[in-house]
Image (cartoon, rainbow, N blue to C red; front, side, top):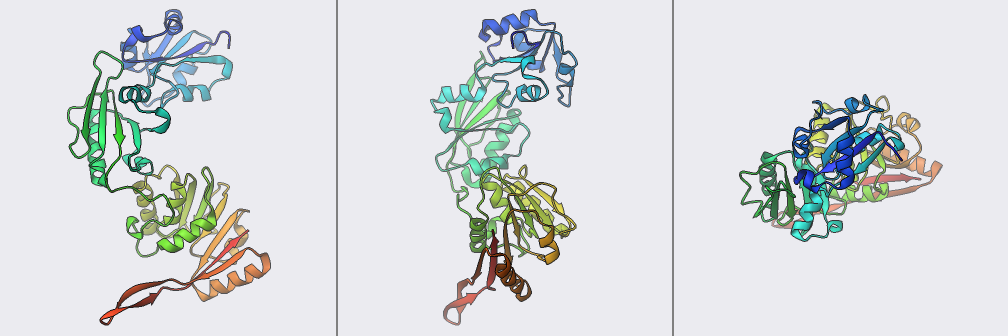
Length: 383
């Protein structure tokens, strides 16, 4: 730590004027400087631009020389810092951050940063925002360019968040700084990079925070764990942030999607190609496609190689499949008499919890209304 060969320097739009003495000294001593073209121009430095596609390999090749890497603001806030640190021993590098763009935006608006969700949307789909948008909630997102700011305002409007107040920040911290307030429905034009967007969410498109989302929100062909049963199933699965789920016979993937919305990751196993497409579409629509993987094939021949905390079997249960499963919280739903009988036997052999649920829905009956029962469902949870 006393003399690392690599210094990661955060630089803002104010260029060298905003750099502390330690950063200036590192640049003065550097034999090699890496950075994006904008960073090199801000620093007034001759250096090597990052390769396209991005790679830290050229930096690692200079090990032993005095090297500076320039990054925007805080290098460990959606920057190159973490990628470099992961490839190095701790004594090889040091970092000198500058204020991050989200920090500058919060400071301009007077927002408590600890109460704001921050997300990098440089290369991620806008749907990743869906779980973060809450009534009156504040979100700051970094964007790839000015066109993305326009597209994000349009996306918010389509999702039912047109009344949301938004602030576009451009070149924050430098002489070209500009902040423009508008609403999502009014849109954004002529946004200039580098830019960032702050959102104070309003409208009608918010996702409920409890399990059992409306079936109409999912793409499906009728093969879906219906909302009341899904809520009961997720309660039995007991999702916890950071845990992993196997959803076997996933159908629409609705259980896996809601598990991921609770902060976990999942693999959905589905034998039918058309249903696998629906699962992927649902994962994208709910912004959890980075958390949910789809495997096409029949179980147990097709099973994930990741260790699950919980397993849900919504279809295709067999003793052969059961024997192939690793130890985990297990929930199985059954609607056929044959599977129901097997679950009753398993409950007697292994214990756990066995429930039989019947749901009736009001529907027109003659000139009045009557109850229409759905198929009864048996659920076994073990352990």
